[in-house]
Image 1 (spheres, helix red, strand yellow):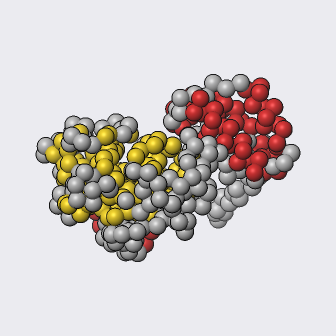
Image 2 (cartoon, rainbow, N blue to C red):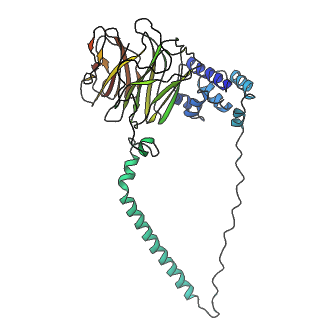
Image 3 (spheres, one colour):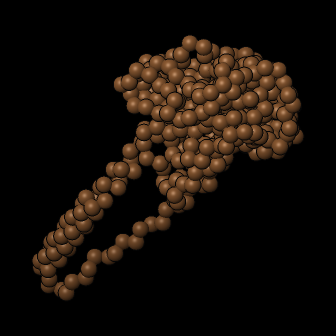
Length: 400
């Protein structure tokens, strides 16, 4: 399936050159192809059909003829693509059988027809009575179950079939209920080498969508240097309890460093992988998460860190003036890299206290994911603090 992966990498490059429009925006331009289909086309899981490829290219302003030649050149290597382009011929409609018609009931000679009339009246009366009884039973059933039905229709409830509704969710290691222990926290089996003092390098991947789903594939937008650390900050809106996993196409598995969920089930996390192999724009990062109505995900490359020291987290209601993780004790050492992230809904945009360097904010309507970093200048208790009037959840992670 290498041909499909290479083709997807070229599609992702076309999207970057077009200004990285969201898949929903592309779907609106395409008109006939959904945003999820366009998203799958760029994932590389299989070669997309030509109608999907054409819609993707048109939405990004590409040369349709050139891309058709590219697509045609590799379709012979991918039977799945050919099968995808074949029109589906619906089976012929079955000829409806003629409904049997009962002959009219025979009557004895000399009958006036009155008994038949009375029979029809009686049948009609019985039908009305049965219909009334069934309607009453149905109404009683709706009243009896109105509470659960109405409750399950609320948008903040988890969908039927979600793992959290089938059995009690067990907190995963490294989550808010089971924080990662201080000290070395390898997210991969690779041994990271010592590097320079901690510093931010780039943001090779990010996305934010109003999309009720459970996973997203983020194309790597800029190369990642071998041996660096990748730190993921994310916010899941109106989410369900459950496991969050992050992997990349080079085999890295990211570990959870910090995790908090506020009273409205908005969840904020920090995950990390250390000593990663070199990543190119042909690679991608896959994020899997419980059912959520929106997601914000940012992947930042840092240099000079090889383990997580620990984390602190907190959340607060709207109407206040500040956010802080000071309620969760976290001891830092001078020279540690501190990464703070806060997810907010409505209210004023979060502003970190002086000394923090704020990275590009991810925003969807009134929902924001704001991430900042700094290097600790002193050893001792540390916290991420700032100003906001919004509902918030914040995580501070320390790395060394």
